[in-house]
Amino acid sequence: VCVFAYLDLDELADIVDRLAEHPFVPSVFSDGHVEGTVSVTEGQVLLITTPYDTGWSITVNGHAIDAQPVSGGALTAIPVQAGSNTIVMRFTPQGLVPGIALSLFCCAGITVVMVRRRHRTIVPTAAAQH
View 1 (cartoon, rainbow, N blue to C red):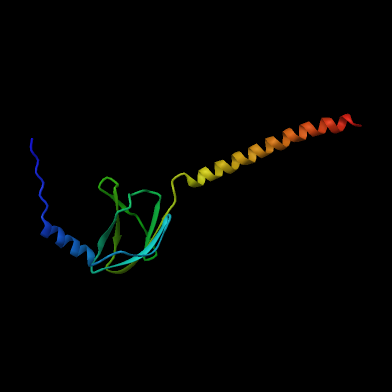
View 2: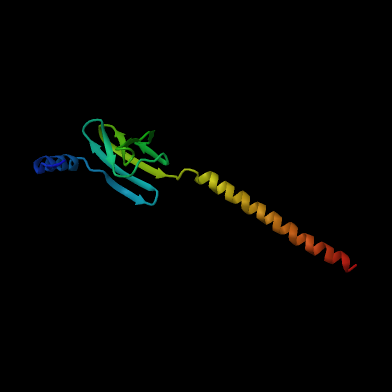
């Protein structure tokens, strides 16, 4: 079976030009935190190349929104309104808070066990000296 692909360079150039009309301009881009603005003429969807994940909390103009997965979750779509939109994205990995709580609980448990063992070995020795 022969498969041929054709890329219409004029169509590609047109798409790139349309996308460049309304760019997302990031003002903050750090690990797990992205902020920026985008201006559009009508209600649209901002498509970002960050994989969709439920750990992202996203606000548009101060209002929490639900992003949508695109292409099986390979991309993320963020609905925006006509005009200027301020977008804030923060990422918290799933299970982070329970993981921290469990780790602290285990550290506390190990500390209690170590103190009791140390106390047990010190008390008999002190009693034997009297």
